[in-house]
Length: 106
Image 1 (cartoon, rainbow, N blue to C red):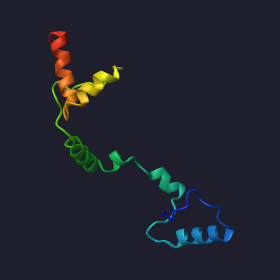
Image 2: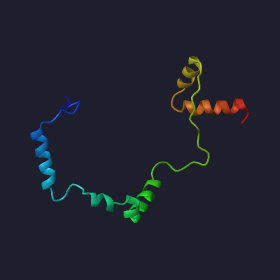
Image 3: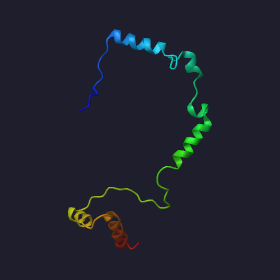
């Protein structure tokens, strides 16, 4: 069973003060000042080389792009048609596609 609370609970003023004191005393993560916000720049502007490297790495993910990718659609078919194709096993969608191509004369 999960021990994580489903909803956050209200905290007391003492708990709030304790949290704020911890934030104020943390030298590695001080609260931002108005000056910090004014000086802030977007990630791509501040670190353009890193942003470009991330873009290149993301572009390499996934399957290679296809010249003629299939399109996903929604179509209503009679239940017996679906049962027939599913009964043929793995790859039934491809077989249905092949049969549709033949019926269309493609």
